[in-house]
Image (tube, rainbow, N blue to C red; front, top):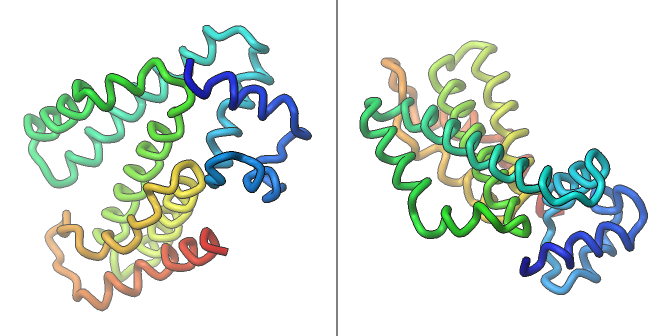
Length: 195
């Protein structure tokens, strides 16, 4: 069970939704990590299903399944079906992912991966639609997903610096300055995260 009971006790011993509005709660937390969407995810399970562990674990398996599907979809933007499926298979069967499945305390890794992959997919869509208005809508969507990924687990924070270097997925090859302009919403999300 590792930290599962610790997280649950922390949820039960603080005021409702503290993880969204009370920074002092994170300073009390031993690791002082900023993961409000982990606590939100666990709290929604608790509020919806009580303390029965089965729904918590079903949520965990559903999140892992969605993670694999989203990862495959994003890999398909650059790779043929077989290679995208192989990449997803390696992700799913690797020892790290296999160890995540039964541990509720690390759900934020799975959910942050989903959000970060969706941010990459929206970013690729923004590049395909540039220079139109649809590009900016996708860029802002990508930035919102990126921010949510950062608020889920901090490993997503460097993503905004990597986005401009991803290969193009469409036929139009934009200037690198266009990529830097499109990453401005992500830079704003990064600054909000740092604050």
